[in-house]
Length: 98
Image (tube, rainbow, N blue to C red):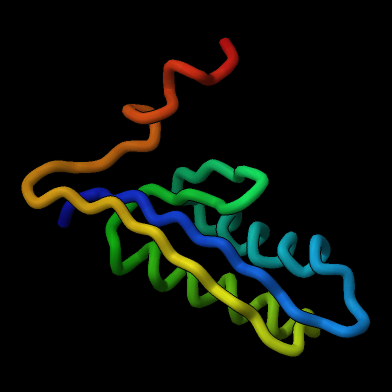
């Protein structure tokens, strides 16, 4: 199974809870999963097999709901190559601080 990139943006809706604190719950799930990932201001990008990343994404959205969100909007973006892997570092490695 090829390595892909999956970008996930979770936008929680709550009348009483802080949105950033709810998003933190999703990021905690991704961090605990052990997959390579990059957190950005608008989304978190993960690297790995598609089925594993989709499972992590579902757990992340469930964590936000469990933390008290009334609902979540979830946006996915995936880069998948037919016969090759997709790596985060191939795209942004040259921009990382040394």
